[in-house]
Amino acid sequence: MDARIQQSVVANLSSRPTPIVVGPFVIGLDPSTTSPNINYATPRPGAPITVADVAALVAAFREADRTPRLEYVTSCAPTLEALLLAAGFTVEARHDYLVCLPETVKAPPTPDGFHLREPATGDQRAALVSAQNEAFGGEPVAAEEDIARLRRLQSSGGVAVMAVAEDTTCAGGGQAVPPNGTVSEVGGIAVRTPYRRRGLAGAITAGITERLFAGGAEIAWLEASGEDSWRVYERVGYRPAGKRLYIALT
Image (cartoon, rainbow, N blue to C red; front, side, top):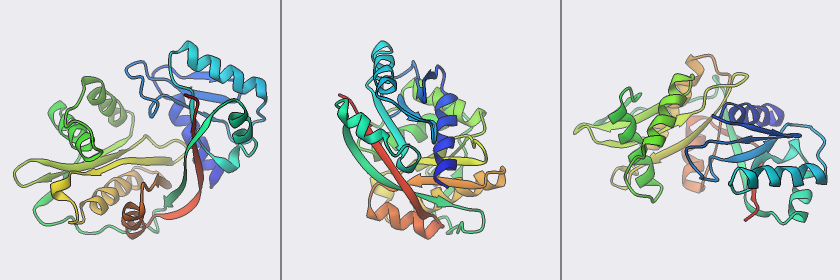
């Protein structure tokens, strides 16, 4: 499972607008943003990695004017962390990832007063991005490049779902990247504060996951940001399967 998840990350970053291959690494470069959460690297699973490879990776990030940063499944590059630490990188986080299969997914009912919808217009995509930004503690606005990124995700086979209240307000939503090798990452699950504790996060997660499986995906995976989200995802049918590392050079 670890190798399939890691390979899906490699494929996802390779599909970015201007990916950069540096030896055993792929940098998913997006010229529309400098965010290190979007512009990061990952190693090919099982590829040998040297000190020189790490130095070349850092140089490529610097040339692109981006912060050197990696996300990867630790078992797929067991010697990499030590090389990165020696080069001055700092661990940001260690996360468990969870997976869901078609036979394990459980769809809770959508809470009364809401319905799930795939955004189909610029305004709807802007409403979803704004709700996510607000839920994650940012400004409730959507930049044009974020709206365009969501549109590209959908047009490439990814999934986006928004939860809409009876007054047409977007209460939250999330998305999943286009499946690679029948594997897709689910992310950005967010519910605005006034609408929390009603079961929307579970309904959104299940709605995205079911759409992935209906489109032919075999594995959906995600990461939980805390105990509350962990419980939500487990109720939908996700189970812990491996470890991932977030590490950066600032």
